[in-house]
Image 1: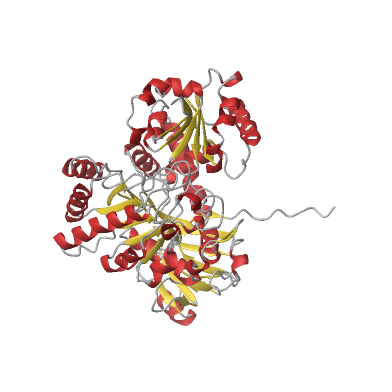
Image 2: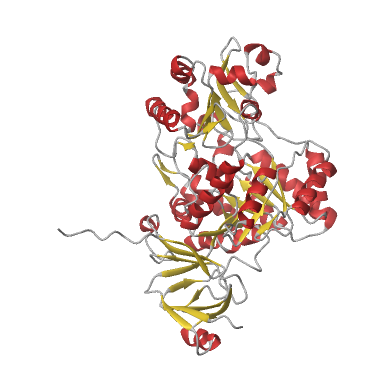
Length: 554
């Protein structure tokens, strides 16, 4: 009670509390929200020594929450060699690579790793080999990683190093060969997806402890600059967890809550896998702001040509294969049921319509066996869903963590996808509005560093579905308020932390974001330019926008 109260007033305030979504003022004491309501109500609760802060008509939001972001790995892309949106041709890529060699960014041991490569590059393996497998690169291993995190390309030097040779490919089954690009003579062309990328990566040294820390620090500042105060990190192995712990010990984990989900292999014995998760939970218990509340599973891969590892109910037209379901259904149900019984949240990468169906089946099996635990089991991506499965999200209390920044009419959703899919599947791409209307809880997610964590860009995209090639299914456009709830309250639900974060309500963490415009009502084209002015976690300002430079008139 001794901390002096502060009252924020003269702002448009979105609380993310559906009963009273707007307020005139907010009072804080210490790291908690004290009162929300009219200025008179909040002033009374704050008492006579309160400090009053005039927000000058700006807009105050609850701290934004990303329910699926590879934060520490994203930080490594900020500090490494990531092409961002800067490269679209092989010439530009060659110039970027030469620069990276010069400044030694992106070096892991003696291997140059360049990340964030646009997927359209993968159809140009002949040009990649001509440019990067001879000359100065003849004995310089190079790894290019796709912006989707599932694909990559290695030059000849790296293929040799990782044992991906013609002999190796010729010994694989037809199914395993699909993970590697190859010519008619089975000579590898460098392209690799999922299990193939894992083999390519197996010879790349892990980042050093200093690189991990540098990446973690960069990620925290970058996400705070976007107004993000809590997140769910869905590929948190021991190195990522240790990075969070080291930052926490140094007082640098200025995040309200991080939910970290280690990956589990659904093909292994479910009880051994769960025991490994429980061991990590125990090891990282008590680290401030960090929780290990569940585990992550890949149900399938990605849909774009040439990868085509997303699991579909009808085969890809060009190969007759149906993608990769990465588990046996009965064993998967056993894993989800056992995890649910142990109080663990299951977070599943499910992208193709078959992966979505099978994941919902497993959650249904868990709900039947255990009763409704109330745990927010989550499907992320949901690029395609069978219309009959859409109502099951709401019925089963399963959350859809959607990256709607991807829902645009572009090469990645049209040319690399449409020619290869059955039209009945293709017409349900990123079915956000159908999910919403059928009672699903939709949480907001970026999957950064796959794409930008800018929440306002994602909301713009969800609302317009516009892209360079027109509009991607206008029937699936999302309403603004649903997206504001997605990145606040619903993401807190996906993290199972709604009692602490996710809305502006008395007793909750004082996580607040001030932005320069009324994001509830501005025209959608203006929403994209929203600027974060400051970000507050537990009552402390953790990021504020640099002041504009004052130009000298002379």
